[in-house]
Image 1 (cartoon, rainbow, N blue to C red):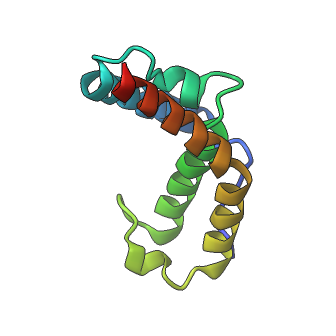
Image 2 (image 1 turned 180 degrees about the horizontal axis):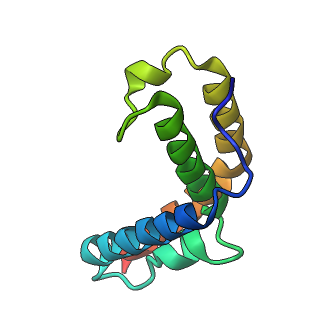
Length: 114
């Protein structure tokens, strides 16, 4: 039984996703604050952000896996035999990973060179 779902995770999980975004944005500001061209919002959260599908699917997977495995955190050991989910996440990464990687790489290269 696959725990990965692209369907809505409900209102409480939307609040959790907003909390995760807020924490990520705060962390990015601390780490990349000296380079405003590294804009995590534009990379991962805006409507047309290249990394948005990866963030949303990863968050959704985490919520469902937490419920499925019955713990506050999910370990690699727990999902090691979960081929269906890993296969789904792998296909997602292949489908959206290149655009995300290239956008992040370009931002970091710009920061490094300027």
